[in-house]
Image: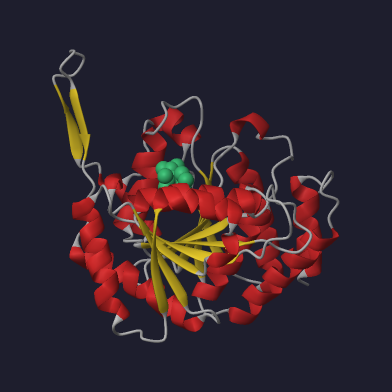
Length: 339
Ligand code: IPM
Ligand code: MN
């Protein structure tokens, strides 16, 4: 297994070190190549993602990414030209984000809700393509557009992947999330394709929720979701709330997947670089560790992935929520537990 590692900025560096510590125990001897990408390189050289590096990164079996973004760089520059560029160039059309409330983890919701769903967020289209522009900039007549791109090809492939996942889960339930009452063109193609693909999956129960209503249901009845499929921007928003109700984005893992394996998939915690707590051994590395579990699952190392998930589950159940331990301490605990 050849792994490309992009620790990135801020706490990305710290949590990636712990994720690799755990990986080295469950699958010893993985060949790793670390890439110096992110704010430091940009400040030093002006480079964000040189083509030569992108070319090299393509040759790996998978990529582990920490976090990207730093206050010393204008907001959006690294996010777009590094993180989003990787997702687009490596055709990561499935942005897979599991939402699971583990026993013992504190949720801001009342009661003890059962939360166990996965979001299939489209990763290469929607309003993220940079398809838009500004007319008459700076004038009172300025017009800014950000066009959401939804191709039948792009929608169908992520919808199909989501149906396949739903079929493999006990509840076999798929919810399309969109805003079809307002966004009738984009929403129309999503709804039509879901209906068409549904005919091939008669065992999967399908429904539809408007994205604004999902913000309510996730807080009041999160147990109703099993597999959610949605576009790039709605998926971004839905998965932040999903992270919050499952104990915070310090626990939320994600996978940017190219299911055909034409390109390496990329695994990263949902959280960002958190410059305010960087370098203080405060960040929870659990999301990064769970991202390694997703990586191993993707590469067919199912048993190793299950060992990591079991270790995390046990650790979360045993943690003092007031005092979970520092970045390194949690990493060491998990590395010991998976041994
Ligand atoms: C995420 C992040 C990114 C996104 C940003 C940093 C571009 O919020 O991974 O969810 O919007 O996809
Ligand atoms: Mn996000």
